[in-house]
Image 1: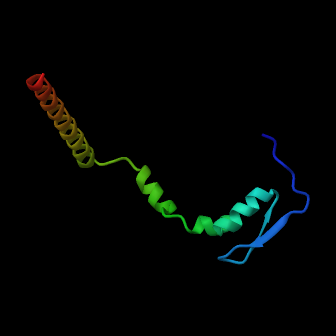
Image 2: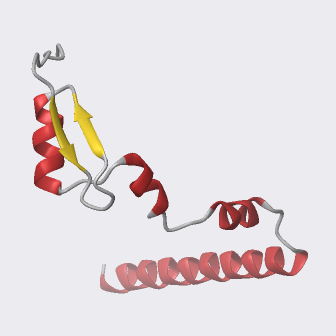
Length: 95
Protein backbone atom coordinates (compact mmCIF):
# COMPACT_ATOMS: atom_id res chain seq x y z
CA UNK A 1 0.00 0.00 0.00
CA UNK A 2 1.40 3.36 -1.01
CA UNK A 3 1.80 6.11 1.57
CA UNK A 4 -0.17 9.16 0.64
CA UNK A 5 1.40 12.57 0.81
CA UNK A 6 -0.44 15.31 2.61
CA UNK A 7 0.55 18.69 1.16
CA UNK A 8 -0.54 20.94 4.04
CA UNK A 9 0.93 19.49 7.22
CA UNK A 10 -1.03 19.71 10.41
CA UNK A 11 0.35 20.72 13.77
CA UNK A 12 -1.05 20.22 17.22
CA UNK A 13 0.17 20.81 20.76
CA UNK A 14 1.18 18.05 23.15
CA UNK A 15 -1.47 17.86 25.90
CA UNK A 16 1.22 17.58 28.61
CA UNK A 17 3.98 20.02 27.69
CA UNK A 18 2.31 22.14 24.95
CA UNK A 19 5.20 21.42 22.54
CA UNK A 20 4.24 21.60 18.87
CA UNK A 21 3.96 18.21 17.12
CA UNK A 22 4.04 18.16 13.30
CA UNK A 23 2.33 15.41 11.30
CA UNK A 24 3.06 14.56 7.68
CA UNK A 25 0.18 12.12 7.21
CA UNK A 26 -3.45 12.90 7.83
CA UNK A 27 -4.31 9.46 9.22
CA UNK A 28 -1.55 9.77 11.84
CA UNK A 29 -2.82 13.22 12.79
CA UNK A 30 -6.42 12.00 13.10
CA UNK A 31 -5.35 9.02 15.22
CA UNK A 32 -3.25 11.22 17.51
CA UNK A 33 -6.11 13.68 17.99
CA UNK A 34 -8.54 10.86 18.73
CA UNK A 35 -6.21 9.15 21.22
CA UNK A 36 -4.97 12.44 22.71
CA UNK A 37 -1.37 11.27 22.17
CA UNK A 38 1.59 12.97 23.81
CA UNK A 39 4.93 13.89 22.20
CA UNK A 40 7.89 11.49 22.21
CA UNK A 41 9.67 13.16 25.12
CA UNK A 42 6.56 13.03 27.32
CA UNK A 43 5.97 9.40 26.33
CA UNK A 44 9.58 8.61 27.29
CA UNK A 45 9.13 10.22 30.72
CA UNK A 46 6.00 8.16 31.34
CA UNK A 47 7.79 4.79 31.01
CA UNK A 48 6.91 2.29 33.70
CA UNK A 49 10.45 0.89 33.96
CA UNK A 50 13.39 3.18 34.52
CA UNK A 51 16.76 2.59 32.93
CA UNK A 52 18.14 1.55 36.34
CA UNK A 53 15.43 -1.08 36.70
CA UNK A 54 16.20 -2.48 33.27
CA UNK A 55 19.90 -2.67 34.14
CA UNK A 56 19.06 -4.56 37.36
CA UNK A 57 16.98 -7.04 35.37
CA UNK A 58 19.94 -7.68 33.04
CA UNK A 59 22.16 -8.73 35.96
CA UNK A 60 22.68 -12.49 36.39
CA UNK A 61 20.35 -14.21 38.81
CA UNK A 62 21.60 -15.49 42.16
CA UNK A 63 22.03 -19.20 42.78
CA UNK A 64 19.14 -19.22 45.27
CA UNK A 65 16.87 -17.54 42.73
CA UNK A 66 17.81 -20.10 40.08
CA UNK A 67 17.03 -22.94 42.53
CA UNK A 68 13.62 -21.42 43.29
CA UNK A 69 12.81 -21.16 39.59
CA UNK A 70 13.92 -24.74 38.97
CA UNK A 71 11.82 -25.99 41.90
CA UNK A 72 8.69 -24.20 40.69
CA UNK A 73 9.08 -25.50 37.14
CA UNK A 74 9.57 -29.06 38.44
CA UNK A 75 6.45 -28.77 40.58
CA UNK A 76 4.46 -27.45 37.62
CA UNK A 77 5.50 -30.39 35.41
CA UNK A 78 4.72 -32.93 38.16
CA UNK A 79 1.27 -31.41 38.62
CA UNK A 80 0.69 -31.48 34.87
CA UNK A 81 1.74 -35.14 34.74
CA UNK A 82 -0.59 -36.18 37.56
CA UNK A 83 -3.50 -34.34 35.92
CA UNK A 84 -2.82 -36.15 32.66
CA UNK A 85 -2.65 -39.58 34.30
CA UNK A 86 -5.88 -38.90 36.18
CA UNK A 87 -7.66 -37.92 32.98
CA UNK A 88 -6.36 -41.07 31.25
CA UNK A 89 -7.63 -43.24 34.13
CA UNK A 90 -11.05 -41.62 33.88
CA UNK A 91 -11.15 -42.31 30.15
CA UNK A 92 -10.15 -45.96 30.69
CA UNK A 93 -12.69 -46.41 33.49
CA UNK A 94 -15.50 -44.89 31.43
CA UNK A 95 -14.54 -46.53 28.14
